[in-house]
Image 1 (cartoon, rainbow, N blue to C red):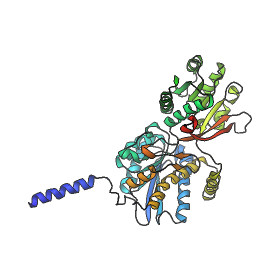
Image 2: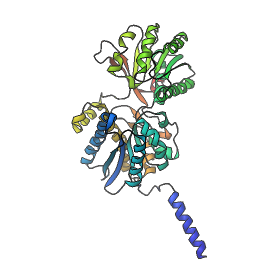
Image 3: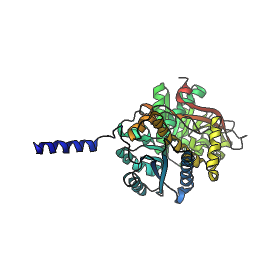
Image 4: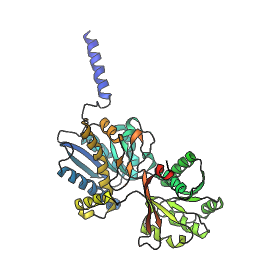
Length: 402
């Protein structure tokens, strides 16, 4: 009888150890006075000009929060370590933060190579991870369940942006036949994936042409799209390749408008092709941040908190990352729920969250699509910065009139 009792107790202990967090128990990194969070980011080397202000933006937001008393009497403490944009060091850093430091959440997971190498580790831990400084397609999910729920991207994901670009084509010119010239890399193929998904849903024809990243000759792809007589063109390529595509479209006499990713909406990139396209076709670009209305007050608050980075876009994204993470804590405080991983994920999914410098993101029903509202700019040679905003933040549903 004694041996049987011991066996039953042992089994119960094993089951308890393997069970998900009980909703009435706090998770690691949470005390009565503190919530511990962390990230690993490149603060040295080639990516330091991105990583350093990004970290500063997160810390500035938390400093303001903590000086005002924190959330529900708890201060939010932020740890970070330089992983040098190295996947091996990034994996080691993540292990240290989760297993040794016992942090509650990862906030602002940084860089495509590190995120790609550690995404499955995050899922295996089951720890909430809010905001990823990358747009890789592996972050995307229409219905995250189980431990995938902890992955909460905010920054634009190319798969979502591909869908938005199709919706913009419909909204702008009532497109029925859309061309896409995309690069055979992760960014290009993810935009293609999104365009295919939305075109199929809407019953639109999508004409596809592939080019190599950085290709000097894209004439064959452009000819394919031009001869297909499409209504609108998506430039599914980033940075070095998009000027080559637009210049070749102009050279071949294209008169159909083009839209490209937010990554390409910069003065330096527009300068390379603006004169070629002028008077022949319009070039549009997506955007995901905006500073009008109430967001202007938030921008002033940010500038006061981080005066050394007041005009730095990367610091602003750090501010955004901290805002999204802490919104889940605010919701738990309001509801009186215990601060643990399961309750936190429920809170984040309970209603859309407004980006302090952008549109709302809905994590509800397992949606993990990153930025879901984008604005629209057009290249205008009469503008000092060449890009001019011509339409505000809109979701796919807004654009399609749903």
